Length: 214
Image 1 (cartoon, one colour):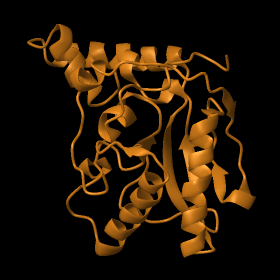
Image 2 (tube, one colour; image 1 turned 45 degrees about the vertical axis):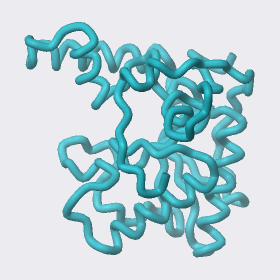
Image 3 (cartoon, one colour; image 1 turned 120 degrees about the horizontal axis):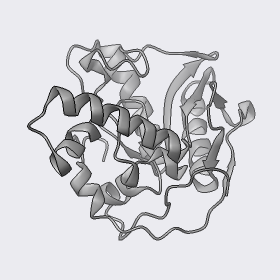
C-alpha cells in the first residue's frame, strides 16, 4: 500500500458495493493531547471510526517527533457541496472538451472533483491532512489544494529529498492506521469509503454518503 501508485477511476469505484455500518458522524475538533489539530473545517464532522484512526496516526507521528501533530484541513463534506462542485466542473470541462459526454465526461471530471455517488468526503471517512510542527505545516513541496501545479500528485516529480521524506512519513502514518491513500492528492486519505474498500480489498465500503450529522 505504501508504494502502490494506482489511481482508481470513477468506473472502478462505481463497482464497489456499500453496506453502511451505522457509525455516527462525531465532532472533528482539535485534540492536542492526542496530537490532532484542525483547520477551519467547513463541516466539522467525521465518522467515529475514522477519528479513532486519525488519533492512531497522529500518535505515531508524535512518537517519532514530539513537536509533530496531524493537522486536518477537511473531513466530512456536505453532499450538496460535493454535487455543486461536480456540476460546476462538469459544465466547465464539458464546454472545454465537447467530444466528452456521459460516463466519459464524468470520468474526466472525476480526476478533479469526485463523482458524488462515489465521493469520499461526504461519507465522513475521507480527510485532507498534513504534518504540523509546533502547529505549522511542514514542507511537503506543494501548497494544499493548489491544483495549478502538478506537484499535488502524491508521487510528483521534482520534489526535494526532505519533501519526499515528509510525504512518505505522512503516508506511512496514515496507512498504518488503516487509511487508504488517494494518489491524485498527496494530502487525501480515506477510511470506510469506496476508495478504501477497493484498495484494501474489502468486500464493500462501510460508509455511505451523508448530507449532515444524521
